[in-house]
Image 1 (spheres, rainbow, N blue to C red):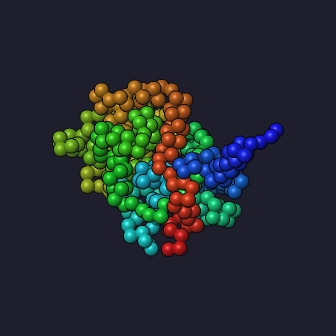
Image 2 (image 1 turned 60 degrees about the horizontal axis):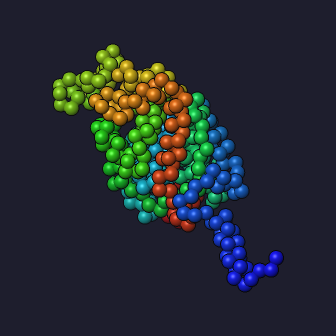
Image 3 (image 1 turned 30 degrees about the vertical axis):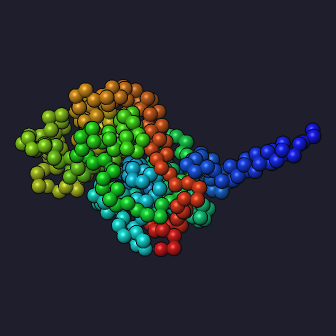
Amino acid sequence: MFWTNNTYYYSLLATIFLVLTLVFPSEGQLSATFYSSTCSNVSTIVRNSVQQALTSDSRIAASLTRLHFHDCFVDGCDGSILLDVGGNITQSEKDAAPNANSVRGYDVIDSIKSTVESSCPGVVSCADILALAAESSVSLSEGPSWTVLLGRRDSLTANQGGANTSLPSPFESLANITSKFSAVGLDTTDLVALSGAHTFGRSQCQFFSQRLFDFNGTGNPDSTLNTTYLSTLQQNCPQNGNGATLNDLDLSTPDTFDNDYFTNLLIHKGLLQTDQELFSTDGASTIPIVNNFANNQTAFFEAFAQSMINMGNINPLTGTQGEIRSDCKKVNGS
């Protein structure tokens, strides 16, 4: 075929654009195959590491899932929660009120990062390791699996103030929690589905003891608590007792990812105020979603997987933004 000068010129531009698009993905574009040619075994490394950690710590799956959540809600999924104080980091998110002496699993992430670096140095971000570890944690605990989109890069900064204000608190109203989810682009279904992560793991007495004796200054326990369950919790968490004592978030299957969390809410056995509010707030749009998930575990699993993908898409750093940390605890060169 005979090409005019203009036709050849535009064809050449199109070819260059296609090549650049393949080599340098557009900003904000995450991909399931991001590491297929640079670290194809990263998912296996992460999964094996989580499985190994579970042999000595039955809580770690829930802890790693929560770690990803607490990262994403503060300036997006950028690994900022992993940074220690040092260099330009004068305040760590680890020391924010919702995280201090509560969020755990940092050592497991550091161990995974070290293994990944040995196999694929300077390639995989800490933010992506958090996302992969969360998926492995859920699926290894008999929960759903999903395709983790990858390509996040790591932040150069931490935001302790943002962690203090953006992360949901176990003492808040459903309206406030809904607002915090909405602020990061997540809707009511995401809120209920992601709350279902409380189907495994533990919580300290200090995060729900206000429900047990003098709820909201009434002088009485929270009326939405099952009375038998209330008595058990009062024994576990006596007034002026040890606020760090651990309690199962799901009293029936505490280490298994299933829909028992929602069936517990139906019989008023949600541990945290923010758990039970999903079902016990009059007229709340969350109630039919709780009912659906309680009666249909498949529906919950499908919604949870999609909501984890949605959460993982919150403001990722991509392209040339941020960096790939060699050590998750500190910015490169610090």
